[in-house]
Length: 394
Image (tube, rainbow, N blue to C red; front, top):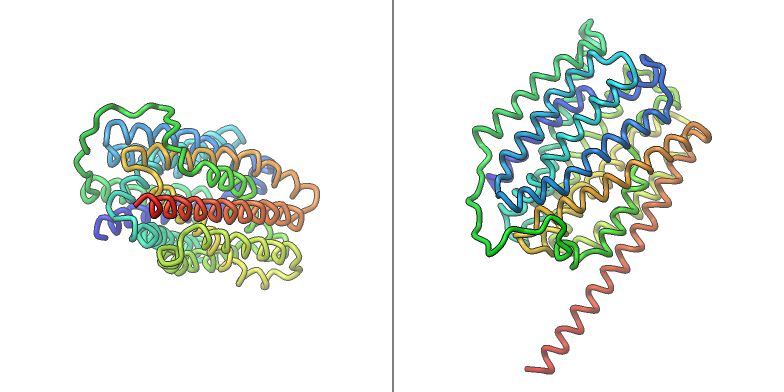
């Protein structure tokens, strides 16, 4: 697990940098720049769509050349530069361009990193490995929120001044990758992988459909922050509410991974999504800002399940030589679904505020959970038939 821990340290510093800036972006966009919530949804959706498009191709490239570490470095490097440059954005176009550039960096690094992570451990440890990685990633988020709270309340830095200081943890990301991340030797193969390989999705395409549907209704954290502000929470207190979310993100991933390794990934994932639907319905009906505090901790539960368990499942059902492409396909379809979903969520917000947007997210979560359970039941029945046939032929 040492290599898994090192990848977690990389994500720790990357999230430390991100969470200094991201809680400020909704207010920077809608208040300082005077843009609409629909534009905020466009920014978030376009950023994720740009990242998603590259996730498949970076995964394919990792399978082909076996240079996961250097693809990671290129992706993280682009993000490291994009975030502090937000300090110099004064209009919609540069904000959109920099946010998209940041997520393009994520698109380049995500699939090679996940393939590298899956290759460090065996099938029985993957839930815990992805959970540990997510926990360290989230610990960086906690640090970032604490730094942001300090900068907002105990310094005279403006929002743009805070953006500039995010270069410091970004440089730590690059150093850890260069000095500590281990690149395994490239395994020999008979032929290079095809850029569009149907075999990469053949064992799990029904799950891909369910995951895409869920992603369509996966609300950005920005809408949760806007909901808290809508209920009367002042800007200076937003980092503390968000801190509840980030601390809970450290707590949930490893137990989720352990439970998924013990009980199987798909039922655990579906159960979390049903729970999420209930949380969203409650969050949309609340009338007091203080009641959102515990719900931010519950939001962390299903967010971490969404981030850790699907790639662990795909890594288990796909051959190692196709793992980068398969994980890239998972991330690409998810991100492309988030673009129209985020725009719709923003339009619903402009018309009906938080209650309508959260109901939209809850409906998508329920449909995805039902689909996942149906797929899991079909898989188990197919496995039982194979066992029966093999028993009869022996």
